[in-house]
Amino acid sequence: MRELSLHILDIAQNSITAGASLVTIRIDEQSANDLLTIAIEDDGRGMSEELQKTVNDPFTTTRSTRKIGLGIPLMKAGALRSGGDLAIQSELGKGTKLTATYRLGNIDRPPLGNIAETILSLVAGNPHSPDFILDYRVGEASYSFDTRTIREALKGLPLNLPEVMAWFKDNLKEGIQELHGGA
Ligand SMILES: Nc1ncnc2c1ncn2[C@@H]1O[C@H](COP(=O)(O)OP(=O)(O)OP(=O)(O)O)[C@@H](O)[C@H]1O
Ligand SMILES: [Mg+2]
Image (cartoon, rainbow, N blue to C red; front, side, top):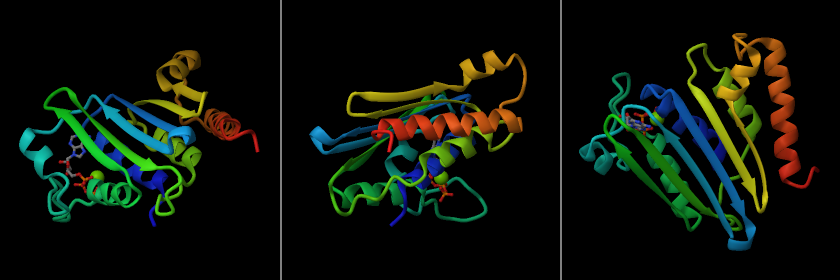
């Protein structure tokens, strides 16, 4: 079973490939409704209606190295297996929003995996990384950041400076731990 953090990595990579300058990742765990929602939104090149129609099909891809794209179909399969679904809204030249839902308590729901590491690798992944917003909610609690605000505070220092990354990692880990009761 594929961890959800790896799906998030995949989908955010699609956004980066699509030339996004801002990628917003929302994770929302609501045990009261037995619902987990993961939404990834970008301001990249978007998809034509034709591509949107076929994108759930594992044989659709615009990549040239391999003829099948599996990122979206794999994530959708996991969502469907756990009583959820996956939907894509996209507009050419505007951007794309992918929303996946899961029944939180479903035994087939994939585990979240290491969200902190995933986010960190996206943010520090390469010097041309876009900006990211993370908005992680568990019940009433939330943890969020916006790399644009962090960049401003850094006054021109790069985000992938080792000291900055170390601070970022601690902040992420602690923030996410606190959401789950600080354990
Ligand atoms: N955020 C996005 N913006 C624009 N186009 C997208 C976006 N996400 C996916 N696509 C388009 O949908 C296609 C299918 O995406 P999918 O992630 O399923 O496969 P892939 O990225 O081509 O290959 P893989 O993820 O298996 O490496 C992509 O090739 C791309 O053309
Ligand atoms: Mg992909």
